[in-house]
Image (cartoon, rainbow, N blue to C red):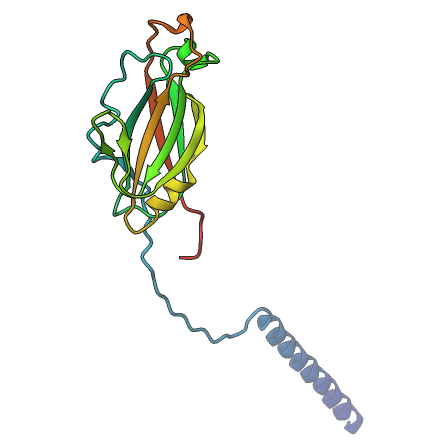
Length: 207
């Protein structure tokens, strides 16, 4: 009888150990993927706005582009004043370019002795003289050398420098000339020259 009791106790002991092992195993499975962490957060905001690029043609001198050029003969020059202004609300410009086009494709545009274009700048407003020429009471600076009447995005660095300066104004003199070598084939021709000044934004930078 004693042996039987001892064997029964051993069987019960084995079963209890096995049960304990199963419980621990279950606890281990339940704990997979479970963890804790400390967190903290804060936030702030900043306003963002875009600038403007605005070029105006206003306050032209007495003899501006609204005055037509008539009855030119070889050797004549026609001078017209243009005042460009960078708006007070505009950011600085990165470039100023000029594109000039004509409405008619005749000798005044494409002839060897057709119209020639030149642009100069004055640090003050241009003044009309009795002979219809425009004079500068300050310093005259070449902006565009004499060349074809038609220009495609011609760079005007001097005008850019002035427009980005403290006055934000560029006083330009547009000069159209008919070469003395123009012959009878140029008689009676008409054309219209359109001038487009374009300002582009400055290069991107840290702001």
